[in-house]
Image: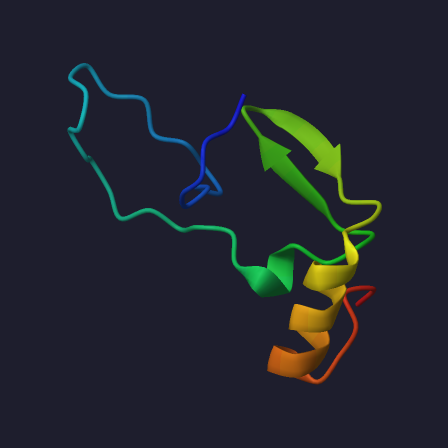
Length: 68
C-alpha cells in the first residue's frame, strides 16, 4: 500500500506524473506519535502502537516517548 518515502499531508493529483503544482507539506516525526490520526489516501489512520526500536528512537532523539 505504501512505499518508503515522504508522506504528503495533502496529496496533489496532476495530469502528468512528476508534475508539481504546489509545495508539499509532509508528515514528520512530531505528527507520527501514538494516539495521533494521520490521513492517508483520504482515509484517517490511527497510530495505536510502534515497535521497541521506534520507541527508543523517539526517546534518544527527542527526549520523549512515542506516546506524545
